[in-house]
Amino acid sequence: MWRSLLLLLVAVSPALLQLQDYKDGRRGAELHDKKHFCSWKCLLFTLQWPGAFCQSLDQQELCWIPQSVNKWTIHGLWPRKAWSCCKCWPMFESDVQELDAELKEHWPSLLKDQPSFHFWRQEWEKHGVCAACVEGMNSPLRYFQICLKLRRQFDIQRLLDDAGVTPSCERPYKLVELRQVLDPHLGDKHEIQCVTDQQGREVWFQVKVPLSHNLTVGCDHAPDGGPAPPPGPAWNSSHGHPCPPQAPLYYFPVDHQQPQRPCG
Ligand SMILES: *[C@@H]1O[C@H](CO)[C@@H](O)[C@H](O)[C@H]1NC(C)=O
Ligand SMILES: *[C@@H]1O[C@H](CO)[C@@H](O)[C@H](O)[C@H]1NC(C)=O
Image (cartoon, rainbow, N blue to C red; front, top):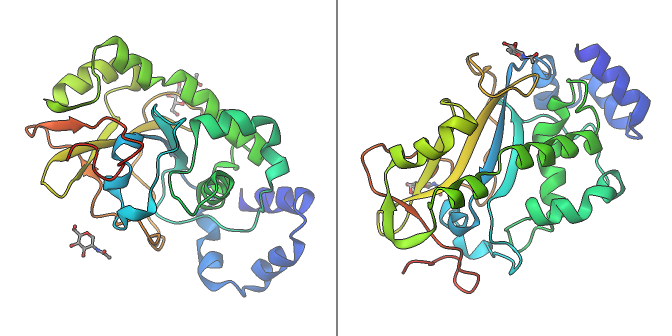
């Protein structure tokens, strides 16, 4: 499987020198991971709520919510594995030019110093290159097309709106209420994730939908092992966790002026 990915890369990638590094074993950590690249069984399609994105960061001053952003946005489509893929398949803006407008709308960067394209490229390098083991996702264009298609399929904004689950600083929700709305569409294996804000409130910020190789909802395989990728600068993984079933859960409104403190 790795061999065919490698051949594919040789065929399409201008970065032959980098590949040479791989073959020669110069890129220690990444080389160590290569045997895993195509061994994943499940994907996680992850959507994030901009109203609580800032709360998920250690350095909250790094976030901003552009005026045009007021709906659930895409975080990524991740082969479920513990390692980062590689920078061995470079992605260029021209690769996804035809999707640019749609990606900017549905997959914006919410970090001040990160252009949206850099966010997409980072997701491609961390996750997309491994997803490219599957026919239908084996190029940046195809991978991002699939992601946009999944967002249309899992339109949780509409599901929540239709069910009257609206952002509020005053009215908390129970996990069971959210699941009642989402289960029929996302399957009963999806994860509703919270962060704890500075006032100790459980704040809903993310949803992860498990998918099989063939993109059907749900996936029963255990996650693949492997070394964990190093955490990013702003992200502290101890913040995100499954929302507790008993606690009141806050679905914060998007506040473009004060994204760090939408609810005081
Ligand atoms: C998709 O994959 C799952 C798990 O491997 C399998 O159970 C299911 O039948 C497949 N569905 C289709 C439409 O191929
Ligand atoms: C991550 O967050 C936890 C809990 O808020 C905190 O104790 C820890 O120091 C943070 N780690 C880093 C690297 O900032």
